Image (tube, rainbow, N blue to C red):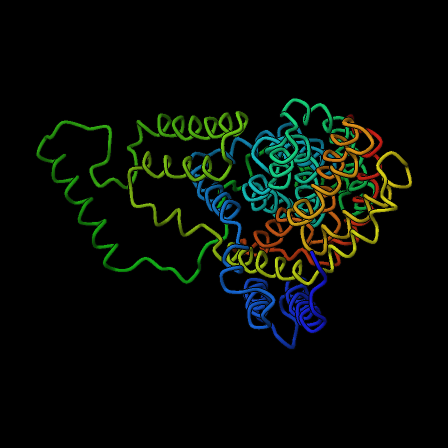
Length: 479
């Protein structure tokens, strides 16, 4: 990409800076409009400044990721109704030996679920649950939320379906699922262990509970925790009186038929819920649909299409108005992503990311240790400036072409390095990955238990964790 005109370069940088500031500091005194509105402002400025045309702005929005997020949010709502998180809570807290043990369990479950269901899905499903466990056991939420977000990113590196950038890499590189798994899994396992140990080391004092408090506050048996999960809801949506009258009328009709001696039916006639005898059958159907979604993802089916199909299947099986579950979708998060896509595309148009790569490319030879270090630093910086998916799209072909000049094996290694570093880079800052943003957004919206994971609190752990895990992983990647 040729360097943009000087004026557009300045204006594009200004638009991106405004977006970045509002994303990091959503309540900045000069313009306290929040992340969602801030991302839209950044995108609109890219169009106003003529960095992008309106058509280019629309094209920049990645609908597949938005559909994936929407579908997983809907699926998570139905999983909650099927008591999936109650069972997960028992698994997390069963015979737990305390807060540090719980940290390790969260890291493990987050990593495995992210490798299979994508890191965004894992964080969408688990954030509120993890926060509730911490709050109701009088533990600081920060280390648990950091464990969830960071482990989700690390675990998602292991498979091509673990995150969107891995999907792009698998598609462009032709690396098979098995080769991808074998190449990165050792790094992911060791990296996960190092990340958990770092969490315990940094937050050990906060996680320590006095002996007299152990039984009352950290006796994790899973029974005393409210496992009801409700993703970020639209608080302004209220049930109308008309709806109440409608449901009451339907209930009266059911009662009337039963009073007349009508034969019992397995379905409630008002379609609002299954009767008590069929609850287990309905839950089984939910789990079957989710397992089917997982199998489809493992088989390589389109991620967003699979997620939205599973969501629709669950709506049909529920046999009632889907509005309550649709209200649990975090629409502000979807809006944030729309604005971010446009803003990042405009920033790419300025030529700054490309210029950075062209400057570093001669020093980023993949067959030299110094070259791998330089390459990793470039990926880390770009992934946190323009996000990991655009970084992969920008650097992937160039890295592969440069490595192919050395050997075919190095070409494959280049793709694996890009997958590993661009994903782990998401742990560096709050803006580094969608998973971290989801954890932050969801945690702040939990009714009565909300917690704000600030940019600086995330950065304090993110920097050492990212550098440590990235470095260890680079030594263990197999080409």
